[in-house]
Length: 250
Ligand SMILES: Nc1ncnc2c1ncn2[C@@H]1O[C@H](COP(=O)(O)OP(=O)(O)OP(=O)(O)O)[C@@H](O)[C@H]1O
Image (cartoon, rainbow, N blue to C red; front, top):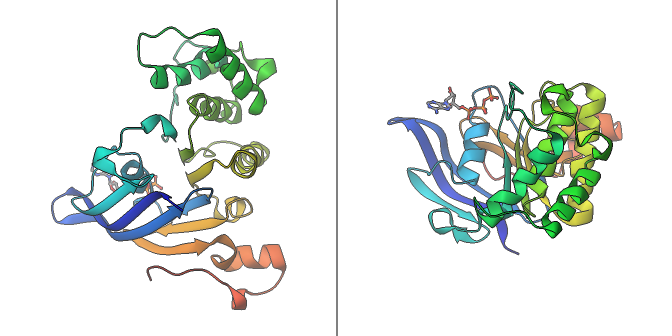
């Protein structure tokens, strides 16, 4: 099976001599739902930027859907929702207009959307549960509605992988569950691979099947159930003696 992202001994520094991520070796299989966790400033967003080709490692190698990242062309297969997208909400557009923008990238700027593009836009708006709100301006949306809009915009490009950076920060607990449930359904029903940075570890681990724990490198990559003692006890009621994580780096 081709990994969606495969890191081999990848090291990245913003400043020479101060690596943010060191020797990351990691293969994320197609169909996985991965929670990327770790302390503030540990390199989680940097890892995602390396996945989506916004940054290149100084040493080591990264492959995207089996292709060396530098040569990968099919970026519409990778949906990326960066941290704080439309955070200030001043952009004057409705949900439907924002989601339609997701069709523009795969078609190329300047190409007019056709009827089938708008059918897809309607379909993804329905999938994220925003049909009744589609003509609302994004300035008027709750945090959860905005995140679902951004997920729909990414889905409109028909990606194979969704990469999300803190899609649930600033949303209340109920809206978080709605977003995680939505992503889990996309993952299990459509086979969409999901890689997301999340700070609410115990919460996200009820949905993710894998965890990447980042602290200036990869501390752990393996099964969610084997990761956190708190999670293990919350789900099974027993201490994590039989945890089965696949430790890649310690
Ligand atoms: N463009 C940049 N230039 C220089 N340093 C940066 C840049 N972006 C991030 N950093 C630094 O790299 C380190 C890792 O940042 P990163 O945003 O990847 O961490 P993070 O784990 O996502 O943090 P958080 O949970 O707070 O969002 C931090 O020390 C940060 O200050």
